[in-house]
Every structure is written in structure tokens, then in C-alpha cells.
Image (cartoon, rainbow, N blue to C red; front, side, top):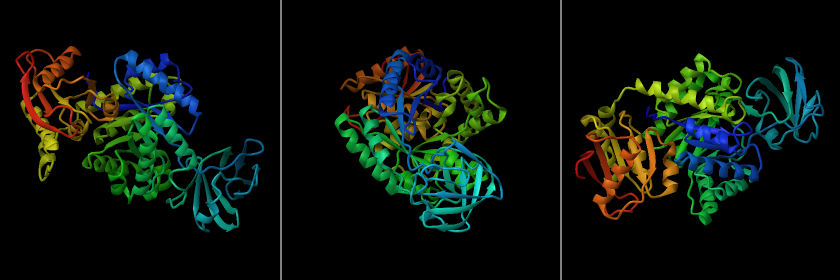
Length: 478
């Protein structure tokens, strides 16, 4: 069964062997995420090599995403590994403390005291512990525990409502960008960007680091700061895609605000011709259990119905007991949800103006394929832009993007309803179209007698040059 929604799977200790990676790709993983918050450069390089080899064995290209750690603000370490905070007691966060105890703990972000004032609320360990700031004295943040619990080494800190000044790109991130480009990452995900400038800087660094390898990665903004919400339009314009990073975002804006924000972000991304990933705790219970909860099934299905390009697994595939089974389950949920999706193509095109020829051809192909009941849309593309534009609208007609560029093939792995395939295109248009049909038929995506809509650009081999739409029946002359 054709699945339109893509699956991003994080790899870690539970999924770092070539055998497991092959099974994950065969189960439906379209993009593999390397989490740079954990592991060394050599770990990531080894895993990237395993991904490429597993993809080769599976017979399809898979994208690699390098997810930067960003300025995750954390407490330091404790003498005994942890302490227990009790509601009503006082506790100090001290930027100069070396080893924490029951009274205080250090900070990895030394400027945190400057960002806070009495009355602020701090949320630790993903919001499980809540501290109210009573006063700030030099390097010390004095707090009263509102909600207590066990606090262990290196747990995260958020300020309710956002407003921390830590820059989006740390020195570690800059080094990790260089590592990511050296191992051939197709996407770079930037953690905690506050505005378009953060994304523009990250892109510049990635393009410079990728130049020796001929790589210009797709840039993904992870929306997880409260400040990013009002700046979302600018961030979208400076990015290729966004991630609805519901963990830290929920801590900053409150759990109740996230579902509506998710819907809004997905719509904004699609309207801006950007791709969007929905992430965090989608199948959390499958870290330990072989089946998801009903609520998790609904969560994944609703993200699909919202129009997300991809759904993402984190610890479920990186450290869980059932990485392959989780992907299989998620893929099945996506397919079922897609069956019920309502097509509003005609409404989508009302009051829209297309100023580019290639974009107009892409929209014409969608419209024609939907109304003629075509079996498939086949787009010959260099950069993948034609396929991206088509994928912003839902028609139930699968899109096959054929390209001679391996980089474009991997980049399109995350686009909704797009299957990217390799084709060494001929410089002769008719020969290229015939070859494209052969590939699609050969892989079983269309059969004799099926109607197919083709798009291509002349002269061949020119990015952004799509200017021709053709309707054919398989088996008849092109």
C-alpha cells in the first residue's frame, strides 16, 4: 500500500547495527536522524556509513538528518548523582557551583542568572519539577520549590514563557555542522532558533562546511522556543522545513497550547511551500511495549490528517526494545489515516497566483491528474522543486520524482506523497519520458493501460526548467 506520510527514525544504541538499520528501512524509515546531543563524531560517522550501506541493500535512497544539540540549558552534576527536591523548600542554582548537593547545583549556562528576575518560573526535567525564583544574587538563583521530585545530573532547564538569551548555535554546534557535512548529511536540524537570523547563520555555516563535499543541506528549524512562535513566518522563509518539536515547546508555552500550535505550524509550512515534521513522544510507550496506546495512535493519525510531511521517532527507535516494530506500526497508522483524508484541491487553487512557469506546470499536473483519475504523476526533476510544490496539496495520486542527482533523491525522501527514484536522464525529451515510464512500471507503481501525468523541462538537465506537461497511457507511444 502506498504511504504518503514519511517516517523519520532516530538511531542510537538500539538501532546502530547494519542489520537492524536494514530492517528499519525495509519497515518504512525514510529519513534517519543522528542526534548530536549524544555520541562522538566517530559514532555518527560510523552510523552514517551503516545507513548508506543498509539503504543500498534495501534498494532505495534514505535521507540523513543531523540534529544539532543547541543551547540546551542544564543543571550540573551532583555529588551523589541526584537529589530530591521537596515542595516548599528552598533550592539554589549556582553558576559557580562545581558539584551539587541537597541545597544547590551548578549550571552549564553561566549567564542564566542575568536572564532571570524574582517571580520567574523555572521548569526542570521537561517540566516535572517547578521552581519559583525568589531572588537573584550574583551567580546564585534562589528559588522555592513549587513541585518537587528527584533531580539528577544534567537535567534541562526552561523558563516558563521563554526569554532566555542563549544563542541558537553553540561552539559545539558549529563543530558538529562540520562533522555532519563530512559524513554527507542531507538535512541539518537547528535547535532552539529564535528568529530568521539564527537560521540564516546556520545555513551559511553549513554551506561553507559542505562546499568541499558538494553538499548544500536542507535546513530545518526546530520550533521549541516561545519566542519562535511570533517569528514563525520569518523562520519559515529562512528554512527549508520546520520541526514541531513538542517537548521543549510544551514546557515553555504549556501542554494545552501545543495541539493548536501544531495545526497552525503545519498549515503555515505547507502554505509557504516548506516541509514539516511532527516530533516528540509520538509512540513513547513502544520504548517498552510491543503495541502503542490508543492515544498515541490518535496522535500520529491526527498529525497525518493535519498534513504533516513526516512523523518522527526519538527514543522509540534509538533506545527502545522494538525499533522495527514501532516503524511498522507507525507506517500502518499513517496508511489508514491517509485513506480518510479529504481532497480540497480546487479550493486550494482559488485566489492563488503562480508567477513561475515550473510552479504553474506542477499545479497543472496535480489538477489534471486528480480530475482525470490518473494512476500516478511522474516528474522529471533536477532539484526536486517541482515535486515539493506538488506535495503541498493532497490528491491521493502518488507522485514519483525521477532525478539523476543522488542528493536531490535523498532530499525528497521527506516530502509528503513523493517517491524519489534515480534516473540517468537522456538529453532527448521523448527518450527521457519513455525511460521514466519504464522505471515506474518496472517497480510496479503503474501498469499497461494506466493513465500517467508526466512533467519535464526543456532543455533537459536544467534546474527550475520544468515547462512541459504530458498525459499518456502506459503502453502507448510517448
